[in-house]
Amino acid sequence: MVVFYKIMNGFEIFILILFSFLPPIIYAVWVRNTEKYHRERWISIFFCFLWGATIAIIASILLELALGYFVISLDSGLYAIFGVIIIAPFAEELTKPLALRFKIIKNELDEIEDGLIYGAIAGLGFSATENLFYGYTFLAEGFLYFILLISIRSFGGCLLHASATAWTGYGYGKKIMGQTPLLKILPYFLLAILVHAFYNSLLIFDLIGVGFGFVAALLFAFITITVVRKKIIYLDTLTR
Image (cartoon, helix red, strand yellow):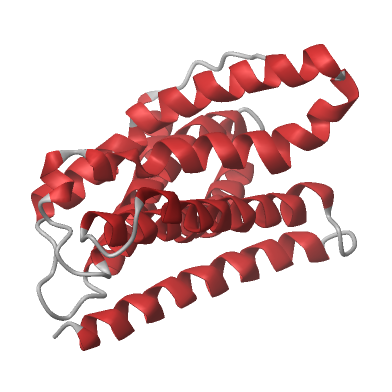
């Protein structure tokens, strides 16, 4: 990893923070308002978003470093693949939905669709801070380059994190409501990892040709968040 430092002026700092956090916040409001009946409290939404943007980021970095070191010690050649399609999705999808274990969120899990919403919100908080890291890197390449790439990331990355983590949240919400045992969260967790890993594979390895993988990744992110929102709307109607 190449480490560099860029001294930013006040305008660049403002733009970096704005482009990093504003899109995830807008998406969070959008996801929260997908429910028509009995919408979630803003204080709970804020807590979940904050968890994703702080604790989940720190925990996932530490876990990725530990798992990456273990893989490299076995076979350094495997890390390039494992880091992107296994380690990162596993670590991030493990830490983001842990916000739902806190009482302030647990008390709100009284409808089956609530887990989808809080999982997505935690994912959006995570993507906001991740945007900040990537945005700082983009700025080193020039302002126009930054605007282009951070705009694209704010679409694909944000929606991917939201839609993937929503599924673990859904499984955990069902468990909290007493409908499933703890072990049955596992399929939803694996689904979250699979969604995340597939997106990363399209974006990083360009599996379907130069340029097409990038477009496919953005399309996949849009499709997955659409599926999540339709699930929320359907369940919200049933529990009306």
